[in-house]
Length: 147
Image 1 (cartoon, rainbow, N blue to C red):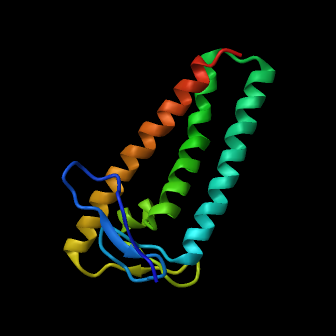
Image 2: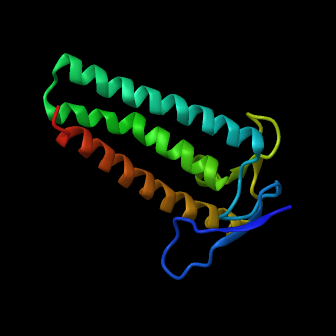
């Protein structure tokens, strides 16, 4: 059993979150999805990367104005969110909704503690902002890339 510390997208001075890679317990603001949900996000992230690359290629072939290529940011945002969720074992949407899932896909349990829900929402907000920033940067790169 290996325990490791993971630095998250938290503010300066926040302690890293320690977790066991094989642990599947809900932890407020740290871990709200289990293996089935993690695998689903990883697969969907791969699909979103493919869509992003295909869209960018299509836009280049069609010869759209550079500013239109910014649309690549949308599927890129999905890819970024999926990979981030899979890596951090934390679903942004579940964080906003106050639920978690360590069972079969499609089933969730409500987070009963109000403080834990607030912690999840705070983490969901921070991760949402990180995803937005990365996808905007990727969209900007698609615009300025000379092709």
